[in-house]
Length: 480
Image (cartoon, rainbow, N blue to C red; front, top):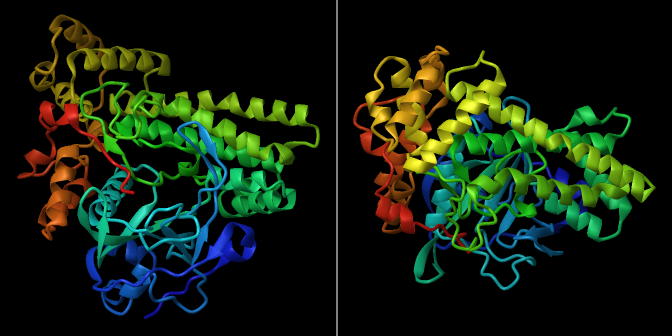
């Protein structure tokens, strides 16, 4: 068994790639392997556990592969940084999965690159397992996302506040093209490079734009639609990305870079978990507007391709950006209609009911995930579990009566409202144990979140929010 990797990105866009080699791993040990994903990729799990382990670390380079650190720029918390890039990551290459789709195989924590900017280029076990569990939970929830293939301990210590065990994450993505990739290309002033990048993105992700009258506007429109759908799904499951910089927004519409991310528990649009988001720029409720802001930055990078006349290019960009809100509203309303079991009820009625419910959730500090699952029991006639969460019972009972009159479908609700999400206290518990060499809690958590809609005996603790004292002080970190 071997692995066939292509070097399409490096060949098509050499100006955006620096060929590089992963650092050695003195004592490699496989911590987690996604056997289902490996099968989908046409890879033999036993080979990956043995001779293929070096590929998962980047220390064994398959024939034909050209590992490279990718260049990109980005707005980080609103400030533009013209040169970021893969400071601790490598694109090993592209492979074609069993469904015929091209996928990137990418490493994180494989060592310093020319983009490291003073960092050590390494990653610790905890943050890599965090990305593994949360990205796979997102996949199970039906949210477009990069996937985790494996986490391999390196046997090398990583120094943060304390000494931590090091690890490398191998992940799979539709691609690693970002808004920041286009910002970097645009900043060079090389229009030919920008054009090649846009053509590469169209061929890889949005081929429908190829024959459009304005192909680059059509590319922009496709990314707008994909991102509107994505952020709506984030909002519907209570996901808080935490670091929505433009270098963390993909052209494919997949969620990427699970750093200081977390799932909201008590509903509050101002929820922030990231330790570096002191002003709440990327709070849960701000995510749609930040997505639009990032897309405006994407438009700025693409202006030279929209039209030779700058004023006309800006008009085209603005017209496209105006469509974002409609895309988002439709995606959110459709998803919320399913969550409330009301797929055939007019959207304005659903949106009104949803807004009322969310207001009451915030007032009573009700857990977002549990509410919708318990609501399906109310649709079956047992309303007490959900009623017991609310302070203003009269107001909630009035809402409940109007909702029930619309004859909600509880089976549909149970298909879209999860029982299990990666609860923050359980993630921290699993990562703390893994740092000490114990993987049992991580594996148990993976088992729960891997089938999020199926309620199972013995998993009650995985369905319950953390203690309020824990949640009030909980903060996440980017891992660097």
